Image 1 (cartoon, one colour):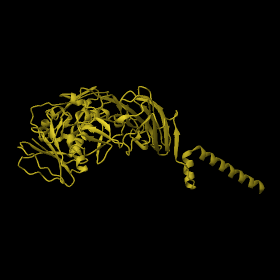
Image 2 (cartoon, rainbow, N blue to C red):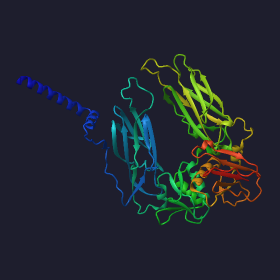
Image 3 (cartoon, helix red, strand yellow):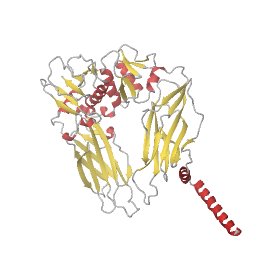
Image 4 (cartoon, rainbow, N blue to C red):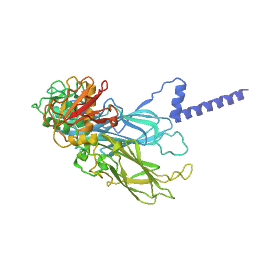
Length: 539
């Protein structure tokens, strides 16, 4: 009996040892067992990268916070990418700097992945991430060339799998991972200047720039114009009741501190120009173009790409940004492709603002696709988006054997054309063409315009007013007059004779739904919805 008891004890001991070893060798299993037993375990890890001594806030240092505070910024799913841009100060002698990057990582069990950190396009780190939640604090010394420009670009790219034991690899996005660039991420810069000054302070304010709606020297029309002007040039602005930046008199210093922690910008050509330069606003390249317009200027990717199944190219345009205020009526596609195997042919689809306008098949043995695609005027508006989809229908070679990668490139020869410049123009085109002639426009706002209506008015103005058209005072004569109106603040109209009259309204969050109506001068204005804004344009 004693010998039997020893065998039982040995068996139990062996089982317990094997169980403990198994749990210790598998962190996921260990966390599962701990949770079942009611034992709390620390889920958030802090993993330090190659850690130079961090620069801390104090005299001789400047902190540049992460753009878009309060917003979630990062990558989701594999493969994935994310990018942020830190503004760099102007006219400040920077001695050295660090990027202090904080990443909050979440990944489901049985996933694995690799995240790369790139600074101005140069890879600085490759991080292996594990299942669970982690917080990684990474510090990178910045090189002189990193600090030489006006922006520092930080990008994350992620690759991996979260398919949880799927037998066959999938080409779809694996959604079980999220990597956030935490708000605590920042630049720390050492400088040799005693005070940073108003211009440097203005340059490093995180995007979007919070701009006071009402200026001290006018009716608020210039802040509304500035909001859409800078936003369209890549420097987002948000109108607020009281912001860090406000306008002051035209005769004031272009940029100055107000003594209360805010900044004042002169309501003058010099002041607005300095504001745009300090915020990194740049006139889009399309303003230096003529017909035909290369789609590369509109954001189309013209690099060669390898893919399986399908590849999409997306680009958009605003009527107000197009040469002469005209809408294109043809897309001239020029693409090079790899050869498809067997007897497969390429399938090509083109959509305009979500509507399918073209579908065709093309020889899979040919290496080029040249195709004119008509763009119906009725499907275009003040803001438009075109999507080109190329599909490789080659079937899989087995349950787990996908076909070979295909490759395609949209060439720089792909353009938007004005094939029939003599065609009649619609109401929207006629309006924008008049505003694009180069003479000024007068912008008027009622004194009791609400903040919400002012924001909507800025969005509407950005759809019809070319960036190169200057704005004059509200009482300027012989120029088109643009009045922002709402149900709470209707317009009294112009005091002189009116020949042309347009109403721009609608939209809200959906700018593609904005309409332009041509009105007879003697017709009363249609009622606007409660809280909605509209533009009344007359000349």
